[in-house]
Every structure is written in structure tokens, then in C-alpha cells.
Image (cartoon, rainbow, N blue to C red; front, side, top):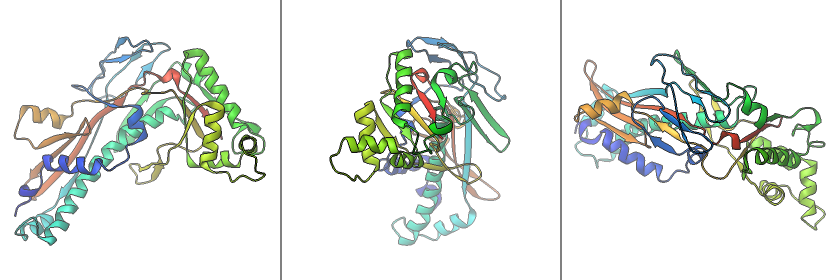
Length: 355
């Protein structure tokens, strides 16, 4: 049995669909649903009134910077390109050759190994837009919503608020006894309400969801004023503070749904990171906040011109290709994507740096 008998881009795509059907989707993917578009450049983005705004393309081989000004104008360059591959090496192919049929138990281990490699690449590609989304929704550099990803000499940097208008109006950094780590003196419910009212006054849209990390929720469970809200709703003298009790207070006092987002990823250096960082809360309106755009990768473009090229698209815009190299004899699996989120409803989003 040869590897070509059991391994192809189409089979990888089918296997991924089965795996993905049992996964809980990323939160960012729900807030910024995927949209496929031809080419590389973002040719338009919508303003707060839903009108299309023309954008300017940039040179291909430049670091991209997405510039937005208050209201509608967004001047854009190009979507970021990501690509990585893994090899089925000569030894692996020799092991497959020893097997007479795919139902052989020995074959299943070898096949599972190479398909796991392919799934690892797809999962890595899915991390990229999710990571971008939370850089926008929890800006860690002076409250500026921006995307910055660097690896192997390539840098992508996009500034969604170059004028500083969003940061001035929609971002607050607490200090002194107001920080939520000061559980004796801070008043998180008041802080959330103040931000929600400020956004509603400017946009007419009141946030319905607040997102935070596990550590931030721990501070809320320890907070004296939050406890007083809980005790006011309960007749018993002692109440065990849980995530659900805190969420109930936020829901009853602010009419907002609290989400503790715990998913993590490994960055280019292999270091584990949280998608949603400690020390922030993000107030979001109901519904979708923008879109995650996927452009046409070189691999997908090759497939369009050469029907024999083994390439399939998964998750709207991730290209998976399987190619053969000689001397050495390797089967290479490649995953690539061109992606960038839009952020049409950014003025309806508020962020508080709480500690």
C-alpha cells in the first residue's frame, strides 16, 4: 500500500470535518464569522451605517498597517499571509509500504500519526484569526486596538485606531484603590455600568456581554461590594461565592451576560498564552462585531489553474495541500491562509483595564 492510496488533501478535509464537528468553536469565531473573498486585498469595509467604504491597496511586500479614522474611513493595505508545512518522511512511507491493507491494526497507527500532523497544521491556522480578534478586543498596548504578529522575519502590524479616538472614548485604565485586585475597595459593578452607559450614550447600543479571564473572575468572587450584591439577593448569612453567583449579579444588576474565556494557544516560540489576557474586561454588544476575511492563497490559486494539484479548502479559507518531493522522497502537507478581521462595530465595544 502506498501513501497516495490513503492520504490526500480531500481525505484530510473530510477527516477535519469529522473532528471539528465535535469541537466547541472559538468565541472569536462566533463574534467575527468567516467570509471568503477573492485575492489578497480587503477592498471594502462597512461603516457604522452599513455603507461600503473604498480602501486603498498597498505594495505586496510591505508590512501592513490598517489605519482607521473616526466614523467610517478605513485605509487598508493587505491581509496577512501565514503558511507552514509538515513532512511524511521516507521512513514513515516505508512503514506504510509494509502494510497490505488499511484495515491492518498496524496501519491504523501509522495513518493516525500522519493525519494528526495534518490536523495540527489546521488547528494552528485556526489560532491565527482568533489571536487577532482578541488583540483587538483586549488591547494590551496603551489601549490601542491593533494586531501585531511576528515570526521568522515576517511582521504584520495593523493599527485600527491611529487617531486615538476609540482609545480616548472606549477604553479606561483603572488605578489606585479602583483596581479590581483591591478587593476591599474597588466597585466592579459600578465600573461596568459606567462603561456601558458611556457606550450607550454615544452609539445607542448598550453592551450585552462582558468577557474576562479566570483570574479576573477570581477577583470578582473575592470583592467585598460584589459579595454585598449577592448577600442582598440571599437571605442566608453565609453565601459561597461561585462563578455562577457573580454572573447572576452581573445579569441582574447590569443585564449583561458574563463569559470567562479560558482557551489557550502556543505562540511561535512554543509558549502557552491565553487568548483573553488577565487584567481586562471587554464589553460587547449583541450580535456579530465584524468579519474574519480569508483571501485566496497561492496554493488555492494554483488549484484554480491546475486541477491535478492536490489542494482543498477547510474552515472557509484555510488551504490544505499535499505535494510530493523527490530526493529525498517526502510527502509534504501544507496549510496556508490569508486572513484579517474587520471591526465594523468597534465603537460599540468598551474595554476596561481592571488591574
